[in-house]
Length: 81
Image (tube, rainbow, N blue to C red; front, side):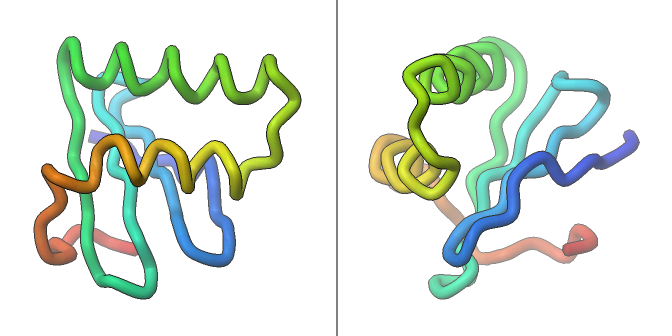
């Protein structure tokens, strides 16, 4: 599945896989990833879009999403960074 980095901030990255079929939210400092697919990926994208529509900077959007999804975080995978 093709990967496209759609966000890269000081603390986080977001990669999109398969044209939005899945997302990986990573915390650079903690070395943790949250991989989202299916309905979770759809909800995650809606929340990204809502933050953009509200005019929030990327860092604020990703900080908020990390707080929401970090319980599902796992140690960084071997996927390409």
